Length: 185
Image 1 (cartoon, rainbow, N blue to C red):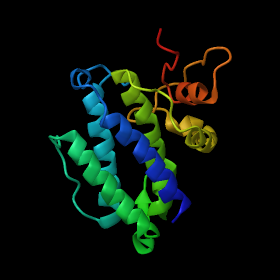
Image 2: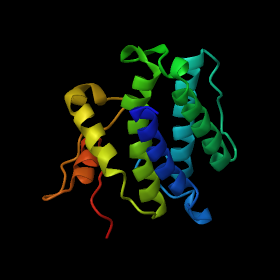
Image 3: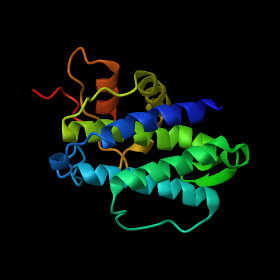
Image 4: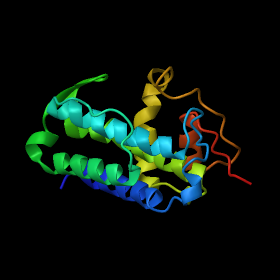
């Protein structure tokens, strides 16, 4: 198995754990993303996964609300894992906003970061455990720092937030991505 598949699987497990334990009344809670409620965060993650798969396979991207977000998440996660486990599909070069690259690299650099950050967003919105995968945080943060300027703008990340004094790496990372990650009191 590839390092990207292993990392993706671990991140997807973490996201799944949150999705599967969101209290029923919390799906409509406001998320750290101003335009989204908790359910919208999951819909976004599903849509991004569908987009990646449509780039890989050249198929039309499904659109619209998936209805049962838990079932839709399970299905799209399985589809990405299946693609990553197939060497021909994982190695297929795809056109991305960052240039041509193998699908596996695109997942490792972009989709995994999206999944990691939105795991925290969903957790924050729904009162679940906000700790996210520390190894993935370190990997993502180091990979994103050189792209600081490119990350900002509409449809991307907000301006950085100054982390609180003595912040841990997760908090620094989230603040770098425009999240107010100060502990909830």
